[in-house]
Image (tube, rainbow, N blue to C red; front, side, top):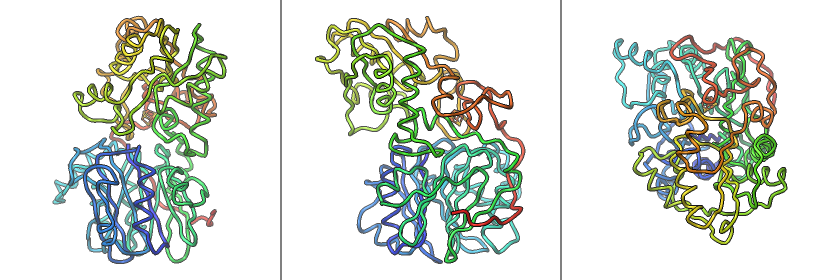
Length: 470
Ligand code: SF4
């Protein structure tokens, strides 16, 4: 649950990175940072939102034609300044800056091994493991150092790296987390989502492919392949489409908005309700609710209004803040729901506490019936690949029947989208490997079938230089 951004070949690289991070703010609000420069790199990071961390003065201290940036929500390592990224380290090969979206499933065993060999870690983040592995490689070229480090790590990673005069972007062989390439004037940009390209008026070119490493320097953009990537099945995180990515983004080459709308349409077919009005839980439930209303032929209205001046409840780390946050963020529109049979469309039901409060609010505002519809299957398992879902014991669908959840949430009926329906909405075919995931996607938090086991194996190795495909 982080956003990463990189730019090379622009006189105001730090300013552009700052703008790019604004359009990725939904991916993390705990800390933000930028490293910029050419050969000498400078860093500024801080806790809070992008607009809190940067101002004209701090950005003016980050000169150079290349920059990387990061917005963070912690999935590994605590929420504190020392874990704010990008990290910047000096080693025998020079300086390297790195920003990471994802989660390394074997980071702990690697860290234990490195510490036993004398490494001193400055953070508690899994990302620092990559830098220590790079430092140990007897190679001068930072690309070779990075490839050697990645050979030893396992799990989910999309990375942007600045080293020497090079901007490097890489996705793990399974492609869990997104990373896209764009063009801005004579330079290149990399980002978690295309939402930042729209803001800075960059042209979207394509996604970095799973298992691909791209290097941008004075010679343009070159593409490399990690060894083993060809034989690694792709497991793009379906939750990016369901909840996490911005609806105006393209992720995995597809419109997030359209995928959510299709989920809602399919949900209406699978879980119909006799009702007077369809309302979304804003913001991420809006496209699915539009799809549901279209398909069901029931009017769509905004029956809940979200305050945009507080963060998202799902990703706030403390329970006490989360519970308080629901009341702060959402309020019902009495004129829409009073006396009505209401279908409420949400994108997930995780603990059930938020849904319970929403149902209570709607009934207090006069709703006659409340039918809850979820545009995803029941969340029954935690994520180990970079999304901060709660532990299994906190996931209400992991240990309760549908009837029990209906009683807890106090709704009149509850219906989930099927796994098949979700996969059809994102255009995935049937899983060829029997893992239960749709072809090309990870859906382990809905199925418990984890495509990469915890703590085993290694990633890729550079085997050949490919033609520049941009
Ligand atoms: S487990 Fe769920 S949230 Fe995690 S990568 Fe897989 S689909 Fe995404």
